Image: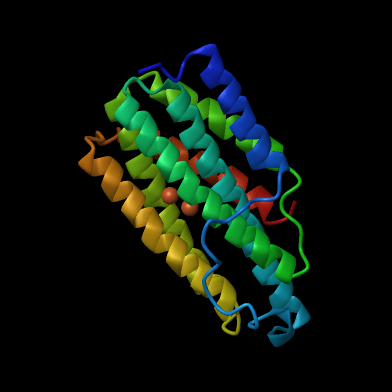
Length: 212
Ligand SMILES: [Fe+2]
Ligand SMILES: [Fe+2]
């Protein structure tokens, strides 16, 4: 089987990157929740808060997709690469759901999304150079941190925003699954300083995407 590091795969990776960042996200499954539960149920301030949180989640999903695309490019085994690309496809649904909700809230995604994608792709590709077990361990830790982040957002969302809440709850359940799949595939536990560095990097992105 061809390696994902062939020129064809580099072109495929570039194609995935351009689609992820610049094309409207397309979901393979409808967004959870009731589309009728729209911004009209929220005050202007609540709508702004929901939009800021969903913008952060949208950037987070794009970054997760970029990490997995970068890791897939440099994966050593076909099985790991297939697993990473499957997880990235699921993140594409999450991305589309956040995009749908942002539009319902009359808000736009982060202007810095190309930067989040490029940085995350590079981190993913570099991580994968350390080998598949470390790369899978990185997925486990990423998903664990995303789960914690989603818990925080579920607590911060305005009470009346049932639609955003339904989207985040479904995402949370699926992130747990991604982490469990990567752990079962042999993901190694990462050293504590690496986990702390990952948390710090994510904080820069989530802190910025809330505003920009
Ligand atoms: Fe996700
Ligand atoms: Fe995930």
